[in-house]
Every structure is written in structure tokens, then in C-alpha cells.
Length: 357
Image 1 (cartoon, rainbow, N blue to C red):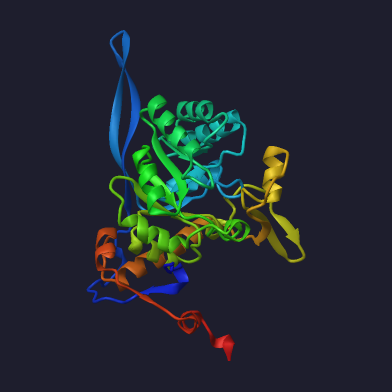
Image 2: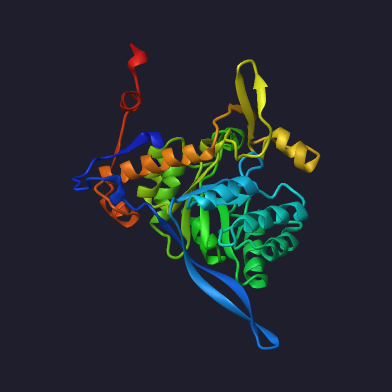
């Protein structure tokens, strides 16, 4: 039986650096080539052509397709700040497509991603989302190493040849390799690590996200790695990227901000917004009308204002992290990175600890 490491189990060792300013650090990451169609007038006719363009996220952060994290406002803000938002699928097809259109109306050049399932109306939903302007589809299921996901990946790639496809979640090398072979362009790596996810407790299954990323990075050939779950700080983001991730997907770190869906609730002198796992009892009843097994919780988080300040803080932390490894870009970070294990006392020392006395 082997051990599996979580983010808190490891630290990056500082390396020699000649970086004098964070302005020298480029933390961008490429999604690869994304295809879009373009229709142009040609005399009395219209000619359709396919454009293939490399798309890069200046900030390698993707907001999670949760109903308390990403709708049009969050997706638009993420795009304007060099990141990406995935609009959740817990809506009617028409409503979700309209959210995509709203983002495109705000910024025609914005890269828009939207989630679909792997059963039911997913093909109809995918067609409506692409027609609305989405360039990226995200097959959003808890257990991505599944026959339903295999079928969905293959059908999406067959029916919508221009679609860039994110799929997941997986936690193993075998799962990653299969999703890559099924046509996924980017893969969400991590099961059960989310702050409001209880999958590992309820089912006994999962692997710490850091370990999953480390494993999958060894075998990745074409597909991009999106580290998803267990990320609490900008330091965890740096660790994930250094371990081999191309991007991170965030939920809790963006929760409670103005751009998340839902109303602000006032209690005493404090303000709160809802944050819930999509496998929580409340979410299942809300969207399915029934409840089976809960693998998440629903909670309230303190209101945090504009997400821009959160993104700026994350960006600053990532850039500082790169500089401690002497890295000016992601490729250098992954080449220079050296990890060590830390004890529980090391973790205690790593946190601010003046109050421990």
C-alpha cells in the first residue's frame, strides 16, 4: 500500500533566483488550439471558415461550475481578468444558453465555457451552448472514469467537431489516460478534495489532489491538467502548478464574492452568501426535486466584496511563488521545482502562529 500526499504534506524548497520584480514573472498557461467558426460575406453568398487559434489564460485559474460560483457575471469578470469561468449546468437549457449570450454581448472576444452532463439532455444542451457562443464544453460529473463519460466524450467530439472539451473528474493515471484517449482536451484531476465535498467520507474513495496531479502529470501527452479540489491558498496553487497542473479550478476561494450568484443575507452586523456542493442534499432537492445520497454540504460564507481583489491577491501570491523557485514562467517552475515533505509541526510552523503561545 502506497502513501498519497496532500498539499499540506509538502513544501517547495526555495531555489536560487535572480528575479528582481514580480513583473518579470509570466504565470500564463495555454489551453492549446481552440477552433471557432466564422461566417463572412462573399459577394451574394456567405462563406464559412474555421479559425484555429491558441488561447492563453494570463491567470491560470478557472472558476468552478457550481450554482453558487459561476453564472454570467462571474464568467465575464474572469474573462476580463485573463482567467476562465465555467457556467454551471443547473438551469434550463434556454437559461444557460442565455447566460452564455450575455457574456458574449459584454465582450465578443471573451472565451466562454459552459458545463453539461453525461446523460439525458447533454447533446441538446451542448448544441444550444455552442450556438449561443460557447467555445468550451465541460462534462461535469463527480466520477469521470465512467462508461457514460466515455460515450459523452465520443459523441460530443463526433457531433461538435469544433468544441474544446473539458472532462472529469478523475484521480488516477488510468482515468486520466482513458479520458485523454476518449478525446478530452483538458481533464479535471481530483476527487473528493473540495472544501464542501464529503465524497471521501461518504464513499471511502478518493486520492489527495496533489498526489493525483503528480501522478497524472507523468503520463499526460496531449490533454491539459486542471487541478480541482483541496486548494485553499495561493501557495497550494503554486504547488499544484509545480506538480504538473496547467490550471487550477477554484470554488471556495471565490465564494462569497459579489460576482457569485445569490443574494446577500444580513445577520447582525455581518453579511453572508450561500455556498454549497452540487451533491449536497439542498442542491439535489433544488435541481432534481429529490434527494438520494449526499456527498457534500451547504453553508454560508462571509461576504467578501469584489472578486477582483481576490484574483489580484491570488495572482500576487502565484508570482511570488514562481520567484522563490527562480522561475519566470510555468515551464521553468515545473523544471526547477523541488518538493520536500513536512511534518505536522512543520505545517504548524508554516502558519502564522503568534496566537499559539
